[in-house]
Length: 173
Image 1 (tube, rainbow, N blue to C red):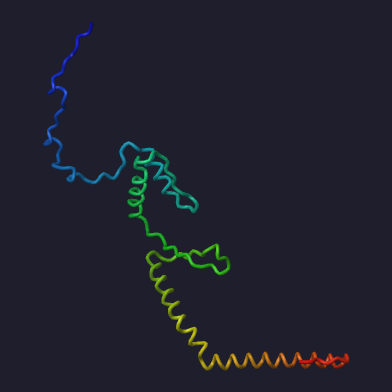
Image 2 (image 1 turned 180 degrees about the vertical axis):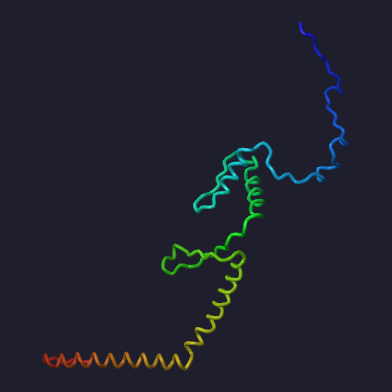
């Protein structure tokens, strides 16, 4: 029969001297920038993030709550600090195909100014377009166009009446 080894309570507990750790609290430690125990995941992320061609994306697969989103976000934020800022993308209406908005690439940080400029331009158009239709110049141009249309209508009608008369017909108005 095997002899039972009995341990005392003191023998079951491992004691660590806090003075041997070299810091008072974990707040004194430098921020850990690497992921522990995931070298393949970090290498794959670094490789995927290094591909700059269009149409390439990162895809992470893993258990919910495993830290993959945090890992990717922190890695990309750290990587972005050393990269030039990407251009601003502004999508505008495509008058040729309403289902396909146009993407404008603006220098980083210029999208907000572009939006404000467009809004100011629209506000100005809302006041200036009605003024243009009320101007004397527009009124004169409109009268000239209407007069030309009336002259053309009369000319066509006169031509039709003369052709009708030649055929022995008469137009009644």
